[in-house]
Length: 391
Image 1 (cartoon, rainbow, N blue to C red):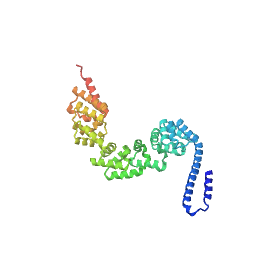
Image 2: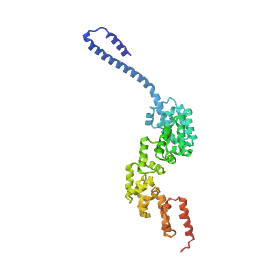
Image 3: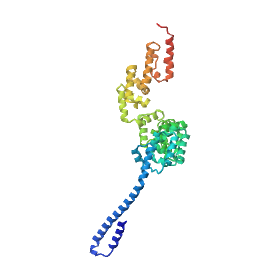
Image 4: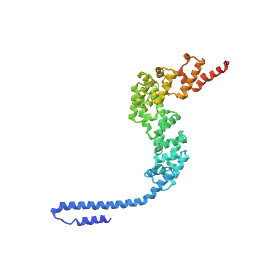
């Protein structure tokens, strides 16, 4: 303050007449001097305010950090970082928030994730802000564990408006998926969907898909099983759509949607790598394309599984590579749990003469359900074997 008074006195003294010849230099000197003094004065005032703020802040910050560590389970380092976004003066409000979350089925780990991602949740009114949203999730069929997973995976969901975002989002999904269970399947695969303007996404994506001939049943399958694909960025969605069309898939067939799911996750480089691996076992380029058109997931299988399954089918079962390309679904079956055990049973039946090789459809044998296989190839021949006289 004394510096400011000095500046004022200096200005009054400097206002007396001066020689015209010295007017420019003296004026510049006065201006420079005033700037320096004002700068010092303002710094002093600023430093004074900072000191006062520092005197008040330590207790508040210390309590917040302590609460985040002791009551919320955050590490000291994380608590210090999150204390920048929330200031707690007492434990009453945050205690009520934590109690509501625990009573709603949240585990300690899930609460930690929520507080880390959305620390200001500790200062909201739990009865007014949180409880109605938790009640809404239960009302649409999500269990307590489902709700806890949804919120812990996407905590900002709790900051969204119930009437302007959460309810309209659910209604727009239900309009395309129909049954409530289908909506729940979609939500379980994409907890973040509530953060999107789904009505806008659905309108534009539905129009785009229908314009190229994709049927509503296929769109429904895509939304339900691949929300990450359907609700991705516009650039990515158009890229996937164009790749599937360029590859030759018919938009009117369900495989078009299957291919979209695969193309979203698999790059062109990876596809070429997988095709090259299949070609090492005797497939031609045409075989690779034919297999992919019938079973798009053949390019998502790991290299180890491709190698193990192809080697076994060719070397142990004796299937020609081209035949496998026409029935590529076998590549998705478990080698240890499905292919090998059933092949061992069939080999045993062949060796005992119970069945003839020309009467067997090997791919059909691998495709049928376990209960059907047991009845047709295990239990039936166990009875026959028991009736045969001992040698």
